[in-house]
Image 1 (cartoon, rainbow, N blue to C red):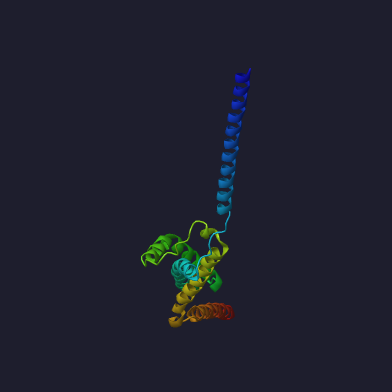
Image 2 (tube, helix red, strand yellow):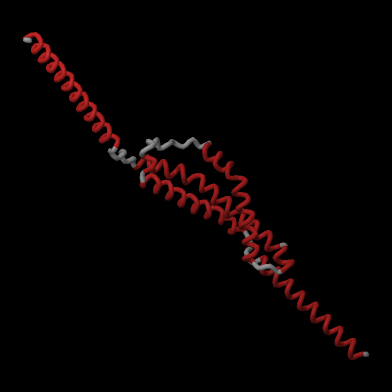
Length: 199
């Protein structure tokens, strides 16, 4: 009986040691999980001003090319339409400008890859954002502002071709054609009237 009681006590002691080790392991596991969870929930480090500047430049530089090409093609194509079919068929300058905008959109679609390739050849330094930093609001804002400033600068550069163009040429040609039409109608009516009087 004594041996039997000793065996029971020994078994209970072993069970307590096993259960204590299991509980200790669970506590360590929960502690490690909580530590990893708290570290993953920390906000990403804020990007530096230099990183945001590099990001804005990389986003804005291609837009300079797009803006310059867009305005230059639209102005020149619109002028060509205004001086040809605009004068011949009497379409308005706004209609000619809309046709020029169509040509500009087609040029932007076909030459977009070329503009991107030219911008990439400049080998601008990357901002080196982490994947977490790329989702930050200030990073998106810097890219958007860089694109806006780039396209504005490009559009002003494309408008520079207006400095050596005769912007009143189409209006003068339309006026001359209108006067010729009126003169031909007057002469025709006058000839008809004179012919009727003679008869």
